[in-house]
Amino acid sequence: MNTEPLVLIAKRLMCCPTAPYYEAGVRAEAERICSEHGLDYAQDAYGNLIVRWQKVSRRRPLVLAAHLDHPGFHIVGSISPGQVRATFKGGVSEEYLRTGVPLRLMPGNYRAVLGKRLSSEKEFEIRFDTTVEPAPAFGVWDVEEFALRAGKIHGRVCDDLIGVAAILATLIELKQARAKVNVIGFLSRAEEVGFHGALAAAQSKQLPKNALIISLETSRELPPVKMGAGVIIRVGDRTSIFDSAATRFLTETAAELQKTVKAFAFQRALMSGGTCEATAFQEFGYQTAAVCVALGNYHNCASGKRIAAEFVSVTDALQMVKLLVAASRQMQHYDCLVARLPKRLMQLARVARTSLRKSS
Ligand SMILES: [Zn+2]
Image (tube, rainbow, N blue to C red; front, side, top):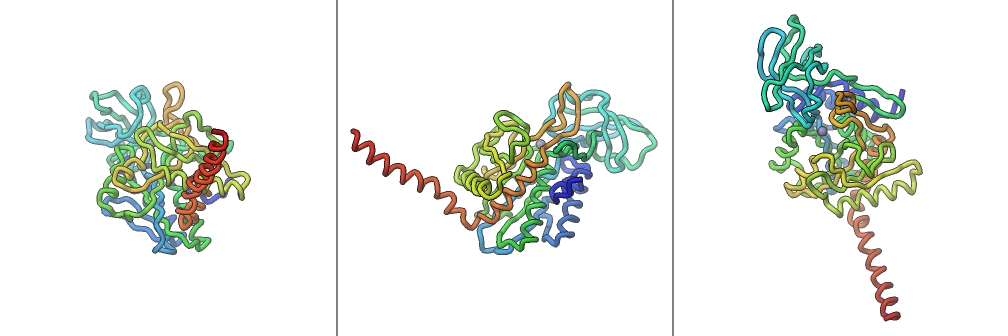
């Protein structure tokens, strides 16, 4: 068994069923993990969870953001005993939402199957044994919650509980080292239905305006990135390009890390498979960058139109934590790291002008 804190935390989180607006169970587990490690945490007015390691609070804060929810079903009404009406919340295309797909209903974790479609909206019938209680509130896919196989974490919800686990592992490592940093973890609700938690927080200006926000995601594996080839510095998503200087800060931090940690690897790419919370924060005026790891079976969509567990590479996820710990520590050198490129370009410009003049 892999005993890396990240893996252990991921396992605990991923065993908690979650769906948009039904994040209470996984949030409670995240709170327990914070308590066990003496990390301060609090819920905001919208139920997002904010975790802090602010050893040097005068320093510019680094906010690490990830979401607690995952696509799932909301039970919206009863049809007859053992039959309910449900709407699917999240991005999964129609052909995967097929009659007979096994589900689990919550609370109670009892078995059910997806029935026929009831309307052109993503509204379905769900069928289950009539003897069960309590009445269901939400439903999730009946696939394995967590497994470690051949260097990969498989589970119902890698998106985005791997991101949440990476934030908690980063904060725990920084706290254990008594690192003189100012880092806030922002664990949001209802991302899969349009970043509700992040938008509410951004609009109400509850995060410090001068913060650098890094959005953490698992993102559909698309060329040129490769699963297992390292954490991805995400320059943009389907909708936006993120802040160039902040992205450079991450790239410089990663390049520094590579000099001292041989096995550290990173990739840099536009991940256009979806829109992430970085776009939401950026539109509200925050300086924003993003990192992610490559995700297999994005939103549980596997080959052959099957619903299956998602998966990520363990080493990619561990490297995400390494990069975030390093970025937290490097925040005090932000200006210096970001100024490296213009400095290099100024020097090059001087050389270029001399050489060009001589040969004109
Ligand atoms: Zn997602």
